[in-house]
Length: 309
Image (cartoon, rainbow, N blue to C red; front, side, top):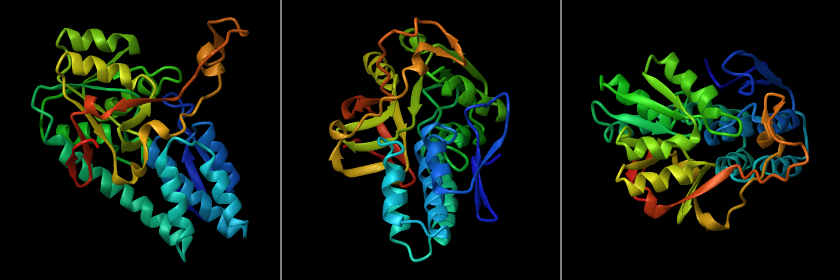
């Protein structure tokens, strides 16, 4: 099941807000529809956001919209994921936006499979791998980044298992990563975010592999909760890998200078319409952590495993 597809000048996005219990595609007929889908996390994950944004720009082009205005609005949808900016700029530089977007769609799948092959080299037979958030097929067009590494290791016949952090506040690990692993028949267990340190401490985790929304000088930005996992992994000598395509690399900025998105407090106050805290409670809801380079063992890319910079 693809995260998205293009048909008859419309973009179809698998609605990730209702997975795993329902599978429906949202039809986007305008670039504004795509912006809304990105903001509301109908589509999420850096590579998927990038390709969806590319098709959103195609919709703007086909509707004869002001492309500069559409580009700026698209970039404002989620400011931390650098793939969004990369994709919009690539479409803006193209003479044939649809051809370029379709090329990016195919490239994403090829890139992820190559990344998976390189990443599988660091996975040993018998490993239990911890992952945080969802960096699987649902975060891309298909196959996945961090979960792509796990899929590739499994395909090589390695006897592996996976532990997924639930990933508060909207539970991408519980709802999406666990579901993907079950679809692949890869043994998986779900834990609350706060249990990751305990499992690492007791030796139940052999490797950590996460994705990234931006790789820059000084570290990576990834879903909130990633830093605590990285600190625990460093303390107990567990290798900590980041799987990210080169399109996620930002060579112009320090990771500490990027904008960290703050999301709706309602996400923290409860879940699925059930509120756990008083509605008047003050909330901080940063969507991303910064994991410093010295906590990262290596960055798995389509070109091989690189040193953090």
